[in-house]
Length: 297
Image 1 (tube, rainbow, N blue to C red):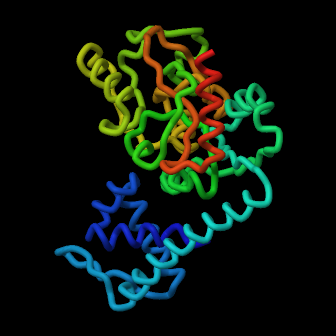
Image 2 (cartoon, rainbow, N blue to C red):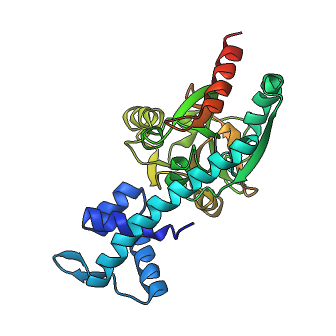
């Protein structure tokens, strides 16, 4: 209901710099500056004064900031009330679905449990796997979605939602179809010597941090290149267009037609499950209870 660049404006103003806002938003400073420039162009206003000593809100920027906070808060409240109104007239579970976070595992679970929820319907809500906007989507749990299915040990995500673990996916690698390893049915870690391995930077994922530590300590012949904090299609595009190797997971085998996903002979995996609001509704809690009981059978 509002331009997502307003959240970037708020973060820049609160943090006092593009780089600090970028860290908070898990974006690059360049992406933050581009969004602010685009917002200024869209509004026809100069929102920040850029100085060698830092940045400062203009008078116009201060007015926009004040109202941006109101618009973001009001929009979230409005959406939450609309969701409640919708559910008051009908029992609906809204399930988020995207290329990297498809809804199929939810449906696999739903058809085992739906006899306990005979009056409920499902509504699939599509969203984009955009690294600049994924945190807003996660924060929308309880408003825009009741559930997402996510691969998640991200500290940043889990500050914004809860997760009921359903299983684990194996860590694998992906390479372009012309890569020397593309025809292999599996590889050993030693097969990656001399390669550049793309993976998320340290600090947000316990599984990835442990794997990175093991590679740096025992396999220094593998060069590690940091990707953006959260994968989107641009990361897979880079893998397809270069000779780099990408750290991926088994459920993303068919995400990009230009790459091949290959198992690695190691024991690394990552949890996936139902992501839901920090303050779930009564209906969501009921479904979670049923899912937990089913998992204990």
